Image (cartoon, rainbow, N blue to C red):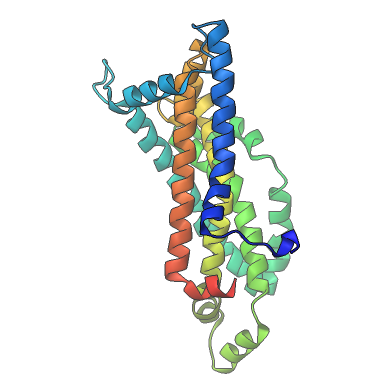
Length: 270
């Protein structure tokens, strides 16, 4: 049997999923053991035991000055900014995506403009945002929104253009207005694609957030990583990086579950 026709069973699938993680873990453990054997005070590759104790300390110990657990405060701060930025981008992307895809006049006026905007490196806008909006949360939210909105607009407008013309013609025959067609015909079919596009944009959104927090912030996951780097606190940095990865995975998993629950027909069609 050819490999392209061979599918793993449940046990084989679980083993194949776990295999890359196990190999990476073993490689890290071997490298850490080698460095610590040469220098027990090495801080570049801390052992798993050190990472575990550091993670427990970060999750449970209160800061002496504020009396708060900084780890959870950083998490709330970053997730608030991420949620606001992605939410604004999703709303703008949905509205403009539908407008560009459905209305020829809007498409002619904005399609090229959005394409040009999507070519601007968002991180190059960070100094401009800090100058115009200050170094507070507004600039960080704006960076996330600016960074992913053009992608969402282009993706959703392309999906809107793919809608069967027969549906639009029938809706017009029944007397539906442009707004009614957008809300009743296009929107329900675009929503699954919006969720999918947001999932794809989460990686860049995290990048923009951490970059903004690293430059100017007083709290946040990215702020804490760049704060402790000067002390070579790799155990803290790796704990925060692992936590960011877990959060990103959970958000992506939650959006996927939401899509399957709210739009099962789209999953079946896909």
